[in-house]
Image: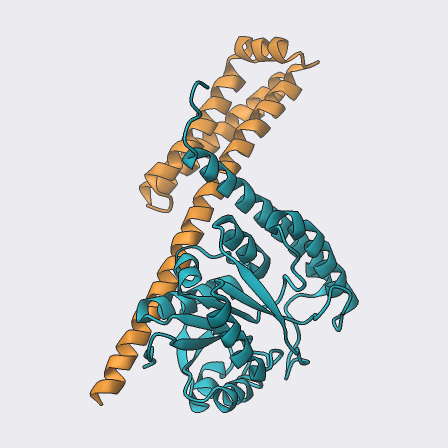
Length: 117
Length: 250
């Protein structure tokens, strides 16, 4: 159990460092990094605060602590995937509207050029 | 550049993707059967010479900067037509399946009936069928799903041979289903209390190429369209409830 918590601690720290480095290099925008930082922070806290994890286990009625940690992590990341799906959907809608606008403007420009010549 | 001519101005739009083998024939046929009507080919970022062939055949071409899919391409055409002030738009597929000889009948029906949409149907009666078995089953399934939603039967809900008037054009320019748009578009119109009519039209085999809807994609198609239909129903029901005045003493 302790070994598992140590592994999740290391993974959380690696994730935190990766996200912060990505923000610093502008590979990821600050507003999208917050979700990852909160998730990694939550994983770190749960990995190091055994009483908190035990409290969750008792509240959920799960048989053992590793399963509780796994389910909490899965829940957090599912929520994140959902949030990113929402963001991607918005971006796709914006992207389609922009592409259509570009095509229509190019059509008008070409028509003006043809008219002038 | 295309211009609307008069109060009954008609534009024929042709969404096309990699149709260099068929597009010139389609444009020629439209010019032959509805002379004087402008034709706009929407090239959904083809990898072949669709755009050049269409232009050579005398069509105007709207080149999309990247692939948007059928709904995105059709909506781009609707947006341009709406901005230019056209009153009627008829969509004909770029693969040659729709016979341009039927365009005048669709146009006349649009003008005479006053309804917002006219569908060129490959069926003249509910039992008639001249399509593949898989597509036929899909059409029957969606007929059954749409019957209670639309409040009237629709024989060919998957037909892309569709004419719309300016009212529907305004709606579709603002919001249009992006993938497999035909069935969802019907629901969008019905929820706005718009009317549609069907007229029997002849469908031909494709000039070249193959349909984008393969057997493997059929299941995805059904789930996607079903979801889209019910999302649209729920969305508009919520709006109707919100718009309804509060009952007195309630």
